[in-house]
Image (tube, rainbow, N blue to C red):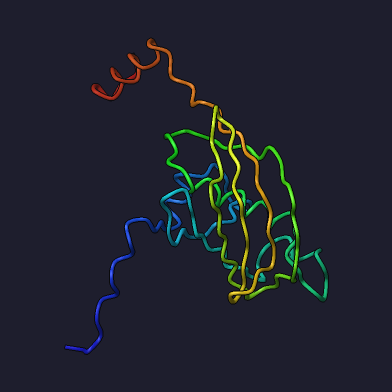
Length: 172
């Protein structure tokens, strides 16, 4: 028997990579959220571990790798999607960026903490106020505008065929 104790469970608002991938449509190399540390009340706190293995570091910049600012903004936009409950199949689209400011370089080895706060969401359009931090220091901030169109509903004939296939295991 050892003195080691099991780690406490993550809070229910935290999401691991599998839940992140189930929520965001992005995949490697464009999924820029590794974990959601907390979410709720129109706010989200996510994490991006910045690794030298990221493909963009090969050319940005050789000998002095720096995470491109546009990818920090994309990471903030992805974190913004965790500010609201999403219907299965929902895809948010970046609609605009206001007031983007970059205050420090983000380099391999940094842990990029992504904070997003929902300012409004009406008729499929929303805005979040966001900031990115490394070691408690703000490295970037922006207001993210996004569009979240309604999820298309499957036609009744398709739903019936899917239900039949699910119950029999064979296409109808």
